[in-house]
Image (cartoon, rainbow, N blue to C red; front, side, top):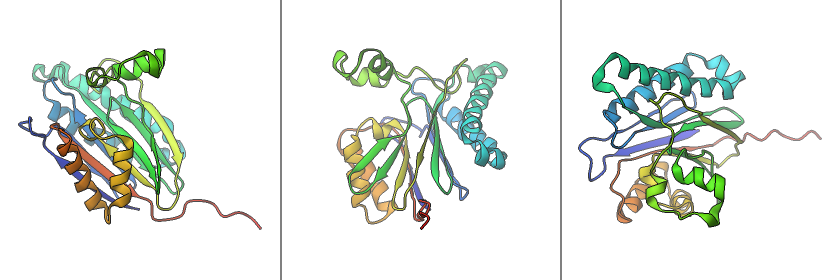
Length: 246
């Protein structure tokens, strides 16, 4: 697989509160310090480092049992961030969203807390959101359906879960991969501005992963995006489908 990452500070930010990590072992993590919380930058860095350490130190468990291992990584990291607030009053209330992915030879395994997202892009015209937002809008959608609520930006950006809170319920998903697939991890600085179709079009038309990332950032800025933007884009170059017996 090949991958490329890009993170830029938003127009209205003094610092970039996003953090990401990529590895050759197929582990990718993106976190977004919760806007308005104290020390969002510190929380996102702590989250990425903690999840990366948890998963890389449990490689065999991750390969054999990816779902419980990834959920445990998110929960342990949540407890660690919460404990930091108890130990040091300066960090009380700090929080972050997170999305993490593990790509093995057959599948992509994902876990998220908050509204940082992951997508599968399968050229030429398929895009599928692999994560589920922990947001007020998503909760209302689950209860009332599409036609009963207003898709306001205000509701969309009110998150209901984040790392650093007392209790979380991480969302896990898994999907089979094919040669030519892309897996995108991003913060809401991108997904909150561009639609799925717009994201897919930029990735499919990009000549390289790096160019696709730059064009995504440019498009988000041109549409009024002023938040931090972080993108991790992975391309599957090997065919993971098992050959049929003859």
